[in-house]
Image 1 (cartoon, rainbow, N blue to C red):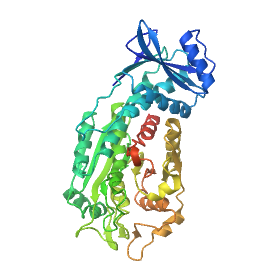
Image 2 (cartoon, rainbow, N blue to C red; image 1 turned 90 degrees about the vertical axis):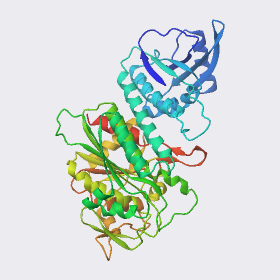
Image 3 (tube, rainbow, N blue to C red; image 1 turned 180 degrees about the horizontal axis):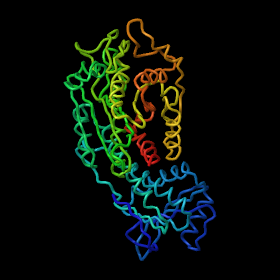
Image 4 (tube, rainbow, N blue to C red; image 1 turned 135 degrees about the vertical axis):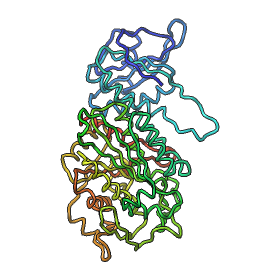
Length: 469
């Protein structure tokens, strides 16, 4: 599918569908458009589609009217229009009736919305249908190329995230995730390093290895590097993603209902790979590192047991009271590993706690951390791109729930404030740099008939990285 910007005056074409974007109180002295706008008023709608007869051929014509100019409302309208757009073959978008600010927001929001509308994961199906929509042309005299390029990069990153998340656990294994991440990095001009069990043992990543020991799939640490900063030694942003490719809960076995959705427990890793690829594709002038610990969490005779004590890479001993609180175990070693890059900031992403779903539902992801300016930058990016995010507190008092009689700390803090105590656990491994934690347990995938990875929070991460340049 191709998007483009056309600066010439739009001429009606029989082989293209026409989409007119209007603002409140627009009047173009065009019979068809004015009739559609009048019908919008009568029906109290913001979008209307029909067909007109042009040179003895039917042409699909639609009008979308923007009542409020904020990005949230424009994005909502763009999502509705994208449902119509995906059924067309070619679309000419007339943006001559609206202001530059609206044009910029519409090009970005509609490009992302169309990318989401046409996305499908059907590589494992015998019979597939090609995407119907081939081209979208934006007709405007305004300078909006950067918004289109940004939106296409976001769609690219979201699709990577969705493809990895939607792949079943017998396809997207730890080794598959590692090799795919390396291939994607090389495709966008970045480098990759894959470390397997022997190297992890040598580095003392015993928390990661403890989770992996119940599975025959092994453990890997994926390191991707992109160098775009003018100064080679500029401190990088480091993204860390939880890569549990299937989470049974281990010996602390999960209930059987909906356990298939635990293939999505690597969506933190998928989001990091997608955002990393998008940033490299945009050739952002910054240095960026992705660190992804990956393995399965399975029960077996070799699996880590409740009550076992393991020593993390930074030397802290951890009492494993619940093997289903495994994400923080693999992340803590990855966060320690991130120190070697002397990072400007570290952001970790994880489908970490069901408690975050209880707190925020499936609308917003939670953010916590040890650096308020970093958190505020993430919240600003979330607001700009409407990737809803909410800050939760991280007071020192929550660490009391992690005290152990037999180790430096335990891996769970009980039912109260589960999302916060999980972040409090991670904070023991992030003391040397600015750090933020995104719990995406409620936003990384949809359940039910619409089951599938959402691609969030790739838009948030790309928007944040753009703010850094």
